[in-house]
Image 1 (tube, one colour):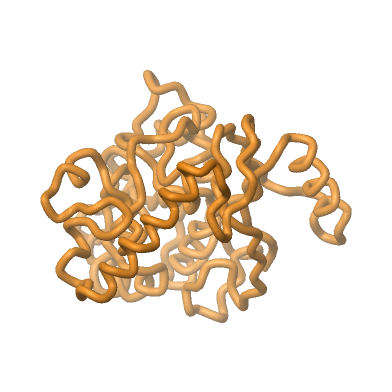
Image 2 (spheres, helix red, strand yellow):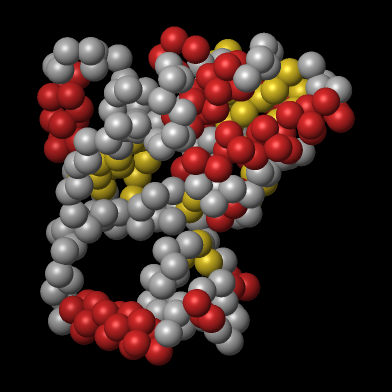
Length: 278
């Protein structure tokens, strides 16, 4: 299906990797997004070969051929403001709860695999109830929408659109004053969330369940830094919480000593972060 990923490092290093990827057959054109961070957003290099870039469990789909109509960030506001457009967030519940486009339907799925069932049981009925003439879908960086729009077309829905470059491209190119986005966008690295201009957001990551936690969540009596949050507190036993607490203690010790924690990369300043659509 292609290549999807995020790399981080000094700009010269990032550009060298991108040059190598561009030289590969079929990768002369990439959808790239750049952001800057003062922290290293990854602890290690990880490369995976998968049957699907994002797992939907619909093997007959061909998103390269059958994806819906791409809509640029510049044209997105007019599309979703149209009352005859049904806007659908294709992301999972933990992502959409910290930020979404105005008026969007949130399927509240636990994984992308759940999306086809949601559409067949709820989404199609919602489309009929609203009388919408078109569907507009969005996701973090655009890849999930290539599959979800291809899926809707396979289900007989003809007028299907999706945000080109995803939320990240929209936040990168749209001023906050003109934006119809509310909240922050969850990202799959140590930044946790970003806002307009792709500036790092206010959310942190619960190390127990790996889900985002806002300021209110961190004030909960069930929140323990590095261990658990209100969402997962009752789902972890004492042994698990003890292991998480020890892990957090070791990380703090390493930081106080000025050492790099096990599995972490050096943390240069001015790290460029280049990611293809996610």
